[in-house]
Amino acid sequence: MAYTSLSQIQDAIKKTETNIEKLVRNYLSNIETNRDLNAFLEVFEAESIQRAQALDAKFARGEQMGRLFGLVIGLKDNICYKDHKVSASSKILEGFESIYSSTAVERLLSEDAIILGRLNCDEFAMGSSTENSAFGNVLNPIDRTRVPGGSSGGSAAAVKADLCHATLGSDTGGSIRQPASFCDIVGFKPTYGRISRHGLIAYSSSFDQIGPFTKSVEDTKAIYEAIAGRDEFDATTSAKPIHAVHPKKTTYKIAYFPEVLNSEGVSAEVKEACQDFLKKAKEQGHEIVEYSFKYLDYLIPIYYVLTTAEASSNLARFDGVKYGYRSKDANDLEELYVRSRSEGFGPEVKRRIMLGTFVLSAGYYDAYYTKAQKVRRILRDEMSKLLTDCDFLFTPTCPSVPFKFGDKTSNPIEMYFADIFTVLANIVGMPAISLPLYKNAAGLPMGMQLMSHSWEEEKLFDFGMDLMEKIK
Amino acid sequence: MKVDGALIDRLSNLSKLSFNDAEKDKLIVDMGNILELVEKLNEVNTEGVQPLIYMNEDVNVMREDEIHTYITKAEGLKNAPSKDSDYIKVPKVIQ
Figure (cartoon, rainbow over the protein chains, first blue to last red):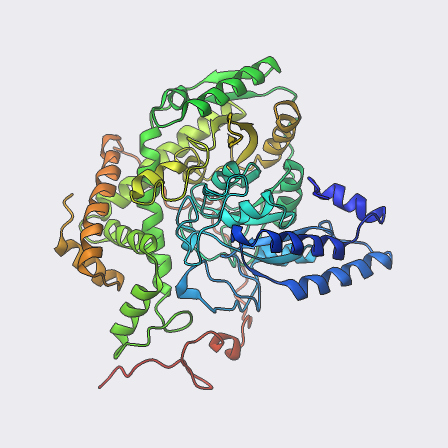
């Protein structure tokens, strides 16, 4: 009884074909039979059943149900839920319990969703394969010898394996869209400022956004609409209306970068899928525009300068004093900081803190940090111009199908390039969606990505739904 | 930019991190490679371009300056690795 959309679930509940408790118990049993995936770090079993029973009773009394009733959802382990553990998949936060809930969680709960547990990810959301978790690898349900992508690998694997109906992740450079592509589901990053980051453990504050993983665009839209919007706890959230009116269109103007289709780093099967997409889109009456983009080689550099700088500052709070892991061997305060951090953080997190410290340090700040911020502005202006003229930018989500464990762990730079097509949306702050539209001959998935101008999420959803019907 | 042991030592001191010799050797190689990659940015002409610092477009987001209590003292102390009833404890600072 795997449902592809929440509206199917709600219909089934209304027809009394199922109820919320049955749904929860079904997911719990799927979790049990898929333990080897290592997607969930913790399942809130007893309280989920309890909440399901309470919601079934509310439904039976004929009360008005929240928009998300029947939705059983999992949280990436960097999204806070009051009185529940959250660790960012790091040893440094092992045992930590949130003392407040993120705004996204508050809004899910107020719409009658059930939060089933917390999901494995790369430590502090830093990675592209979930091989950086302190709590072990997550397996890709499509092929267990391959990575699920990252950093929200557990969130993607859980939806694909039907361990819950949907999940939340966070996306700093592709951490929702890339694993969604690797696990053959829908992944979405909203405009910067659309969804409150209050209660999201910060990695890189000018890039991070929360977003959903789902099996359908319809569900992405439903979850997004429930959690988006201005929040008094996050001053960077926008007051712009979520349902911004955009002219309904049946055909769109879609830009693509020829450099992507000629790039050596993109596998032949992904290029073929892109060509097929463009051909079909054209057949369906959309206008396809070739746009030469000379900044492709600068995306990863901008991303690594700015995100590591912000991370080095954000992660300074983990000092072994107020919360989290504290080294047992420290004799004085300085040693307590150094030992707690050195023992608590994993290698990739330390590497990024060191790099971020370097680009912010005296003598190098202007040459690296300010330089990257200037190129960021050039890119934002360029993309703003492009997406004012065109409706969407089309790229593949990833340069390849999911890779095998250990394939890219020895060379951090090779791993970084898994995000080459997703980082652009974070650099310029615009929304983008990955749609599960293609598979290679071996059945491995290849997501296709569409990006729109800021605040045009609804347009992305409209076109996304259309494509899922007509191309998939 | 050449990454050497002295630079790693200076950055680890600023970051409050420590590394053994094997980790340092790996960091020298990895950071050297990453910096070589990011130095590609120098190819882009940024003359006259202002750095993009804030991503949100709204200016002057104001709110009333009202006092709220969002967490209690007990909640604030809840996750401290060492504490008494009122304070978080750390090793002696003044010997």
